[in-house]
Length: 263
Length: 242
Image 1: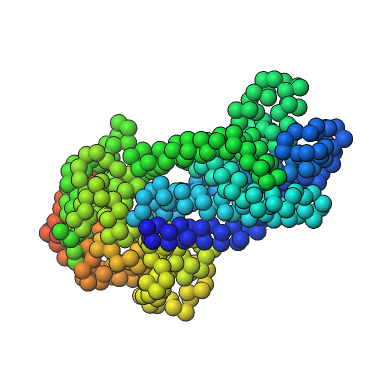
Image 2: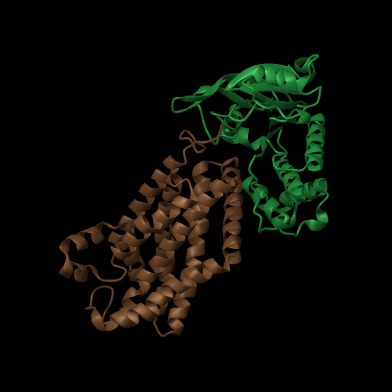
């Protein structure tokens, strides 16, 4: 068991060092949600009224509403970024180094996943700090309570990234992932608008949003930021994590060829 | 048994058979050249030996452990140098070695000792804190070999490790690995270059997924020399660089 933890620590250290080194990635991860928070939210504030819905006790501004969704957005992009780095690792060969370590493959992949989640939590922490400086805050307890929620949602979104990386074999194909995974997941969720608002324009869209796992990741984060647990969201996020992880492990099963073109 | 034992192993990519009933052994202290032209099945065999692929046909035993039944024990006794470099170019030499040590469960004092031994073997103790990107191709390859030995394996697998290197680096690396074999390691070295093979080496000729020959290089070369012997065996006018 000690060897397992040593490997986990080694993988987490490597991922964090890579992240710190890639300053552009760090900036991009912060700028994206900050643009939404500061530019888009300011524009939408007048157009979109948000009524009192749990976990909020009073009328809130649009900036406050989208804060959890933007935390989820950071994790969604990070999950896909980790997936991209896995595809890169496969092409560059360092994935082979990882997978030939004498530890169970599921543990190695889970370690890789956890390493990515820790990076995403660091990004969210910096984002929340900047938001707080801009006056967009949550109750103090929320900053602590959100950590386990971010861990759960990060694991789910990271497992999705892992699954994607097990199917995408070439970096060139990755742009498609952005179009077909990230954008539909983000826009068809409760990140930008509450589901009742979505239902006003289209009940079908609302139903699609209600099936989207990202909606539950956002709601889990939203409630946690106010010190509350949304059990339904936790259940969805947990079930999706298990399903994505099992599918990803199947994708990385050595009985299924990882190297198709070698001879 | 020490060393590597491959017994009646076959593998197919869909309908294309990449390996067909491959059988041979490499004992400790032996340098075995796995010789074959491109597409012979060498990389597929390496993927099976490192469990990146698995097959239901045949058995592979590593230091006495069946890789299908006891993959962790088998992998713990293998050191691998892949054809493609697997170093983090933007990390330091020491950081790369530490990451590998961690993947093999080495930490603290045991990791530090293994890293120092690897650096000493490389003659790179003074460059340990340089980024790998600053090293030339030959040094990077030597570093990968030293890294593959950090967990004290019994078998060293090298998949065309001299690809892309200049003549001097190729010679140095070939000499270095022959020396490792003399010290007791079982070495399996995939290549398609005959000048990397010495008369006393074991040579397994792989062609179109089948073992055509398994014996000493001296015996195989006969009077005509290795290059011609390989050409006549693999036919089809494929080039065998001298």
